[in-house]
Length: 161
Image 1 (cartoon, rainbow, N blue to C red):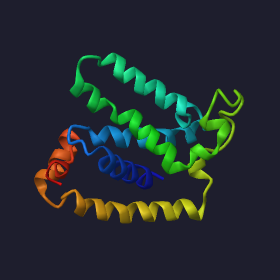
Image 2: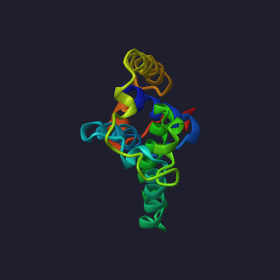
Image 3: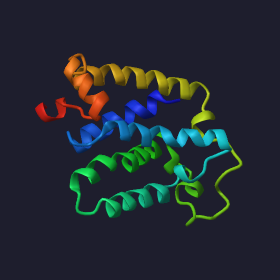
Image 4: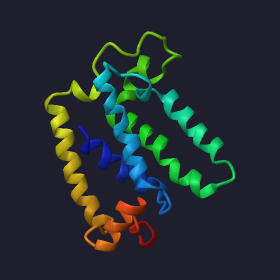
């Protein structure tokens, strides 16, 4: 259950923000990190809007005055927010709005990612198809573009598009 979140987050963030300075490796990290809560009877904090907002504020405060550092590390909270959208977590009021909609909503159940059965498999297939499209759209057939993504987290095609 990683392809849907990783590729979906990268494509969405790349098309919305159009920032060649963002580290898309960190967007992927933020987008797949909540899946790990499945190992600990989640959903927990990473499935809440509060965690994304607190992390966003933390990045902005800790890197205050260092714009490029902020832009790079903003990928993690943005990836977390992308996960909430791609996962449909926003439709679970108690988890998404925790603790404002009640404090007993976290833990002790399944994370949404693992409870979808055939729909989850379909999401992965759509993620693969989106990955093929993104490969072409972002020029990843070019070895230099792939190297920039793997070493620096940059999608160089964003500057040219």
